[in-house]
Amino acid sequence: MDNKRLLGTLTGLSLNLSLLPCALAADTLSLQFQIGEETVQALDLAQLRTKLAVHDIELFDPHYEKRKRFQAFDMADVMDAGFGERWRHHDFTEVVFIASDGYRAVGAPEKLSEPGGYLAFADLDAQTGWEAISRKQADPGPFYLVWLGEQQSTANAYPWPWQLVGISLVDFRAQYPNVYPQGAVPDSPAMRGYTIFRDRCVRCHAMNRQGGMVGPDLNAPMGITDYRSPMMIREFIRHPSRYRYSHMPDHEDLSDRNLDDLIEYFRYQAPKTH
Image (tube, rainbow, N blue to C red; front, top):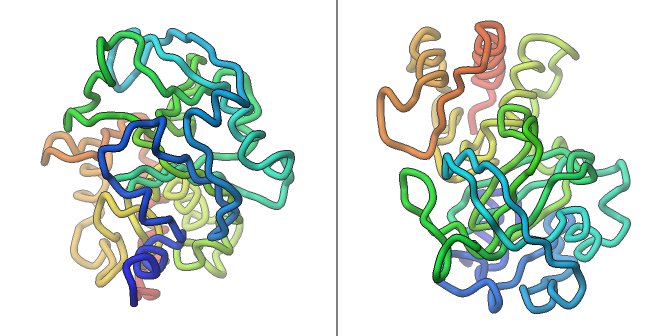
Protein backbone atom coordinates (compact mmCIF):
# COMPACT_ATOMS: atom_id res chain seq x y z
CA MET A 1 0.00 0.00 0.00
CA ASP A 2 1.45 3.41 -0.94
CA ASN A 3 1.74 6.29 1.53
CA LYS A 4 -1.24 8.19 0.19
CA ARG A 5 -3.58 5.19 0.47
CA LEU A 6 -2.20 4.38 3.92
CA LEU A 7 -2.89 7.92 5.14
CA GLY A 8 -6.44 7.72 3.80
CA THR A 9 -6.96 4.38 5.57
CA LEU A 10 -5.74 5.67 8.92
CA THR A 11 -7.66 8.93 8.91
CA GLY A 12 -10.74 8.15 6.84
CA LEU A 13 -9.82 11.10 4.63
CA SER A 14 -7.76 10.90 1.45
CA LEU A 15 -5.47 13.88 1.94
CA ASN A 16 -2.94 14.76 -0.74
CA LEU A 17 0.61 14.14 0.47
CA SER A 18 1.51 17.71 -0.49
CA LEU A 19 -0.49 18.81 2.56
CA LEU A 20 1.90 17.23 5.04
CA PRO A 21 4.34 19.53 6.94
CA CYS A 22 6.85 20.94 4.50
CA ALA A 23 7.60 24.52 5.64
CA LEU A 24 5.88 26.11 2.66
CA ALA A 25 4.49 29.64 2.77
CA ALA A 26 0.74 30.20 2.66
CA ASP A 27 0.93 31.75 -0.81
CA THR A 28 2.39 28.52 -2.26
CA LEU A 29 0.55 25.92 -0.15
CA SER A 30 -2.97 25.17 -1.31
CA LEU A 31 -6.00 24.81 0.92
CA GLN A 32 -7.75 21.60 -0.15
CA PHE A 33 -11.56 21.48 -0.31
CA GLN A 34 -12.98 17.97 -0.10
CA ILE A 35 -16.37 16.25 -0.11
CA GLY A 36 -15.61 13.17 1.94
CA GLU A 37 -12.54 11.72 0.20
CA GLU A 38 -13.03 13.56 -3.11
CA THR A 39 -11.06 16.77 -3.67
CA VAL A 40 -13.31 19.44 -5.16
CA GLN A 41 -10.59 22.01 -5.71
CA ALA A 42 -7.46 23.53 -4.17
CA LEU A 43 -6.96 27.27 -3.71
CA ASP A 44 -3.75 28.96 -2.62
CA LEU A 45 -3.53 32.32 -0.86
CA ALA A 46 -3.08 34.30 -4.07
CA GLN A 47 -6.22 32.73 -5.53
CA LEU A 48 -8.22 33.34 -2.35
CA ARG A 49 -7.13 36.98 -2.39
CA THR A 50 -8.49 37.43 -5.89
CA LYS A 51 -11.85 35.92 -4.93
CA LEU A 52 -12.46 37.24 -1.41
CA ALA A 53 -12.45 40.44 0.61
CA VAL A 54 -9.54 40.79 3.05
CA HIS A 55 -10.36 41.90 6.61
CA ASP A 56 -8.13 43.24 9.38
CA ILE A 57 -9.50 41.74 12.60
CA GLU A 58 -8.66 41.99 16.30
CA LEU A 59 -9.71 39.56 19.01
CA PHE A 60 -8.73 38.03 22.32
CA ASP A 61 -7.05 34.80 21.26
CA PRO A 62 -7.43 32.05 23.91
CA HIS A 63 -4.40 30.16 22.60
CA TYR A 64 -2.09 33.17 22.72
CA GLU A 65 -3.91 34.37 25.88
CA LYS A 66 -3.82 37.97 24.70
CA ARG A 67 -5.28 40.26 22.06
CA LYS A 68 -4.11 39.53 18.55
CA ARG A 69 -4.51 41.16 15.12
CA PHE A 70 -4.73 39.20 11.89
CA GLN A 71 -5.46 39.61 8.21
CA ALA A 72 -8.22 37.17 7.37
CA PHE A 73 -11.06 36.08 5.12
CA ASP A 74 -14.63 35.69 6.32
CA MET A 75 -15.06 31.95 6.85
CA ALA A 76 -18.43 31.76 5.08
CA ASP A 77 -16.80 33.43 2.06
CA VAL A 78 -14.02 30.82 2.13
CA MET A 79 -16.58 28.00 2.15
CA ASP A 80 -18.47 29.61 -0.74
CA ALA A 81 -15.22 29.92 -2.71
CA GLY A 82 -14.28 26.31 -2.09
CA PHE A 83 -17.63 24.54 -2.27
CA GLY A 84 -20.14 26.97 -3.77
CA GLU A 85 -23.64 26.62 -2.30
CA ARG A 86 -23.17 22.91 -1.80
CA TRP A 87 -21.78 23.26 1.73
CA ARG A 88 -25.01 24.88 2.96
CA HIS A 89 -27.03 21.75 2.15
CA HIS A 90 -28.16 19.59 5.04
CA ASP A 91 -26.78 16.28 3.77
CA PHE A 92 -23.43 17.14 5.44
CA THR A 93 -23.47 16.68 9.20
CA GLU A 94 -19.95 17.95 9.94
CA VAL A 95 -17.04 19.95 8.60
CA VAL A 96 -13.63 18.42 9.28
CA PHE A 97 -10.70 20.85 9.45
CA ILE A 98 -7.44 19.10 8.61
CA ALA A 99 -4.14 20.34 10.04
CA SER A 100 -0.73 19.48 8.66
CA ASP A 101 0.29 17.68 11.87
CA GLY A 102 -2.61 15.21 11.81
CA TYR A 103 -4.99 17.20 14.02
CA ARG A 104 -8.66 16.93 12.99
CA ALA A 105 -11.11 19.56 14.26
CA VAL A 106 -14.79 18.83 13.72
CA GLY A 107 -17.46 21.52 13.51
CA ALA A 108 -21.08 21.92 12.51
CA PRO A 109 -21.63 23.47 9.06
CA GLU A 110 -24.26 25.85 10.43
CA LYS A 111 -21.68 27.42 12.75
CA LEU A 112 -19.72 28.58 9.70
CA SER A 113 -22.77 30.55 8.55
CA GLU A 114 -22.67 32.65 11.73
CA PRO A 115 -20.91 36.02 11.80
CA GLY A 116 -17.56 35.91 13.61
CA GLY A 117 -15.61 33.10 11.94
CA TYR A 118 -12.45 34.11 10.05
CA LEU A 119 -9.64 32.28 8.28
CA ALA A 120 -6.48 34.15 9.31
CA PHE A 121 -3.53 34.06 6.90
CA ALA A 122 -1.23 36.77 8.28
CA ASP A 123 -0.20 37.80 11.80
CA LEU A 124 -0.28 41.60 11.96
CA ASP A 125 1.61 41.60 15.28
CA ALA A 126 4.64 39.72 13.95
CA GLN A 127 7.40 41.43 11.99
CA THR A 128 7.83 38.33 9.85
CA GLY A 129 5.77 35.17 9.63
CA TRP A 130 3.66 34.17 12.63
CA GLU A 131 4.17 34.44 16.37
CA ALA A 132 4.64 30.92 17.78
CA ILE A 133 1.55 29.47 19.44
CA SER A 134 0.80 27.03 22.28
CA ARG A 135 3.17 25.16 24.61
CA LYS A 136 4.69 23.52 21.55
CA GLN A 137 5.66 26.94 20.15
CA ALA A 138 4.18 25.92 16.79
CA ASP A 139 3.96 28.03 13.66
CA PRO A 140 0.16 28.38 13.11
CA GLY A 141 0.46 29.03 9.37
CA PRO A 142 -0.50 28.71 6.64
CA PHE A 143 -4.09 29.23 7.82
CA TYR A 144 -5.66 29.59 11.27
CA LEU A 145 -9.42 29.53 11.99
CA VAL A 146 -10.39 32.11 14.65
CA TRP A 147 -13.65 33.50 16.04
CA LEU A 148 -14.58 36.98 17.20
CA GLY A 149 -17.57 36.13 19.41
CA GLU A 150 -17.09 35.73 23.15
CA GLN A 151 -19.17 32.53 23.13
CA GLN A 152 -17.53 31.14 19.98
CA SER A 153 -15.09 29.01 21.95
CA THR A 154 -13.88 25.43 21.80
CA ALA A 155 -15.96 24.77 24.93
CA ASN A 156 -19.02 25.58 22.81
CA ALA A 157 -17.83 23.33 19.95
CA TYR A 158 -16.36 26.07 17.75
CA PRO A 159 -13.16 24.72 16.16
CA TRP A 160 -9.94 26.80 16.37
CA PRO A 161 -7.45 24.77 14.28
CA TRP A 162 -4.15 26.20 13.13
CA GLN A 163 -1.75 24.87 10.46
CA LEU A 164 -4.92 24.35 8.43
CA VAL A 165 -4.36 22.68 5.05
CA GLY A 166 -7.70 21.04 4.24
CA ILE A 167 -11.46 21.28 4.78
CA SER A 168 -13.75 18.30 4.22
CA LEU A 169 -17.54 18.11 4.26
CA VAL A 170 -18.73 14.76 5.60
CA ASP A 171 -21.67 12.78 6.80
CA PHE A 172 -19.89 11.85 10.02
CA ARG A 173 -21.73 8.58 10.55
CA ALA A 174 -20.90 7.37 7.04
CA GLN A 175 -17.33 8.73 7.03
CA TYR A 176 -16.40 7.39 10.48
CA PRO A 177 -18.48 4.24 11.01
CA ASN A 178 -16.03 2.90 13.60
CA VAL A 179 -16.50 6.00 15.74
CA TYR A 180 -20.30 6.01 15.63
CA PRO A 181 -21.94 3.86 18.38
CA GLN A 182 -23.98 1.61 16.10
CA GLY A 183 -27.19 0.50 17.81
CA ALA A 184 -26.99 2.94 20.71
CA VAL A 185 -30.36 4.31 21.84
CA PRO A 186 -30.92 8.06 21.19
CA ASP A 187 -30.18 10.16 24.29
CA SER A 188 -28.62 7.15 26.02
CA PRO A 189 -25.41 7.77 28.02
CA ALA A 190 -23.38 6.12 25.23
CA MET A 191 -24.94 8.36 22.57
CA ARG A 192 -24.48 11.50 24.67
CA GLY A 193 -20.86 10.47 25.26
CA TYR A 194 -20.39 9.96 21.53
CA THR A 195 -21.60 13.52 20.88
CA ILE A 196 -18.99 14.86 23.32
CA PHE A 197 -16.28 12.68 21.75
CA ARG A 198 -17.25 13.84 18.25
CA ASP A 199 -17.26 17.52 19.23
CA ARG A 200 -14.12 17.55 21.38
CA CYS A 201 -12.02 14.42 21.21
CA VAL A 202 -11.96 13.12 17.64
CA ARG A 203 -9.95 16.17 16.63
CA CYS A 204 -6.92 14.48 18.25
CA HIS A 205 -7.96 10.90 19.11
CA ALA A 206 -9.02 8.01 16.92
CA MET A 207 -11.64 5.43 17.81
CA ASN A 208 -11.00 2.08 16.14
CA ARG A 209 -8.37 3.69 13.86
CA GLN A 210 -10.64 6.44 12.57
CA GLY A 211 -10.23 10.08 13.60
CA GLY A 212 -7.33 12.29 14.66
CA MET A 213 -3.70 11.18 14.80
CA VAL A 214 -2.26 13.52 17.45
CA GLY A 215 -3.28 11.51 20.54
CA PRO A 216 -3.59 7.73 21.04
CA ASP A 217 -6.43 5.63 19.68
CA LEU A 218 -8.84 5.06 22.57
CA ASN A 219 -10.11 1.66 21.45
CA ALA A 220 -7.36 -0.02 19.44
CA PRO A 221 -5.68 -2.29 20.09
CA MET A 222 -7.43 -2.20 23.48
CA GLY A 223 -10.27 -0.09 24.85
CA ILE A 224 -9.26 2.53 27.39
CA THR A 225 -11.81 1.26 29.95
CA ASP A 226 -10.00 -2.10 29.93
CA TYR A 227 -6.81 -0.66 31.40
CA ARG A 228 -7.79 2.63 33.09
CA SER A 229 -10.16 3.04 36.01
CA PRO A 230 -13.19 5.34 35.63
CA MET A 231 -11.71 7.64 38.29
CA MET A 232 -8.42 7.97 36.37
CA ILE A 233 -10.20 8.53 33.05
CA ARG A 234 -12.36 11.29 34.56
CA GLU A 235 -9.40 12.97 36.23
CA PHE A 236 -7.17 12.81 33.17
CA ILE A 237 -9.82 14.23 30.84
CA ARG A 238 -10.52 17.07 33.23
CA HIS A 239 -6.90 17.90 34.14
CA PRO A 240 -4.40 16.32 31.68
CA SER A 241 -1.92 19.15 32.30
CA ARG A 242 -1.35 17.77 35.81
CA TYR A 243 0.02 14.53 34.43
CA ARG A 244 1.96 15.15 31.21
CA TYR A 245 2.93 17.78 28.65
CA SER A 246 0.84 17.23 25.53
CA HIS A 247 -1.52 18.89 23.06
CA MET A 248 -4.49 17.85 25.19
CA PRO A 249 -6.23 20.81 26.88
CA ASP A 250 -7.89 20.72 30.27
CA HIS A 251 -11.67 20.21 30.16
CA GLU A 252 -12.69 21.69 33.49
CA ASP A 253 -16.08 22.74 32.13
CA LEU A 254 -17.22 19.14 31.65
CA SER A 255 -19.68 18.07 34.33
CA ASP A 256 -19.58 14.77 36.20
CA ARG A 257 -22.48 13.62 34.03
CA ASN A 258 -20.58 14.57 30.86
CA LEU A 259 -17.60 12.50 32.00
CA ASP A 260 -19.82 9.57 32.99
CA ASP A 261 -21.40 9.69 29.52
CA LEU A 262 -17.96 9.66 27.88
CA ILE A 263 -16.98 6.61 29.91
CA GLU A 264 -20.22 4.85 28.91
CA TYR A 265 -19.40 5.60 25.28
CA PHE A 266 -15.91 4.11 25.73
CA ARG A 267 -17.44 1.01 27.36
CA TYR A 268 -20.00 0.69 24.57
CA GLN A 269 -17.27 0.80 21.94
CA ALA A 270 -14.87 -1.52 23.78
CA PRO A 271 -16.21 -4.81 22.30
CA LYS A 272 -15.80 -3.32 18.81
CA THR A 273 -12.01 -3.11 19.00
CA HIS A 274 -10.34 -3.16 15.57
